[in-house]
Amino acid sequence: MPFSELNESQQNQLLSLARQSIGNGLGLQPGFKVNLDDYVEALQIPAACFVTLTINGQLRGCIGTLEARDPLVEAVAYYAHSAAFSDTRFSPLSEADLDTVQIEISLLSPMEKLDVDSEHDLLQQLRPHVDGLWIEEGTHRATFLPQVWEKLPEPKQFLEQLKLKAGWSSDYWSENIQCYIYTVIMFEEK
Image 1 (cartoon, rainbow, N blue to C red):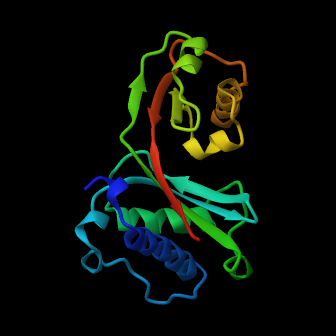
Image 2: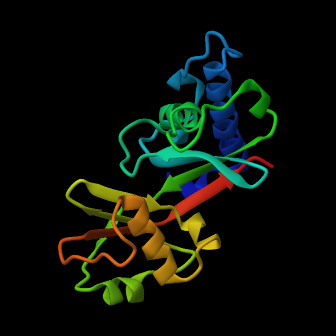
């Protein structure tokens, strides 16, 4: 089943699961464990996903995977916990944060390699507000989910900030940079 076919109830199950996983990390959900048998088959399919946490519209944590390795419910629980407690850009979430944190889940399509021969070529191929972008060369790598276009709507600015995130200068370019795009199905708590 394509993830675009997840119904609202299934999306809400995943959001609830993410919140339970965070609660478990805070010691509020003792005995919490993901049991695959508790979920329909569509939620057991291996999936690439990211869990993003915000408080008052400000990023508070975002961790995920670009590869579909684990069953979706296990991945959501794991990355929700990681976004809350292991995103090194932020201090771990506190119990006081739990009431105000907003959870967003992004389910990723398989990545598609772009054949680019220059930065200009990459900028021409990017679809603003549609594509997530993964760039890598050697030990430098980074990704922006498509939602980042909301804050960085210009392709050049989007790419410059992504290069900074990867540890390069904003004007860095090399013929060895590998570029991949993907799309997402995103849903969040109401």
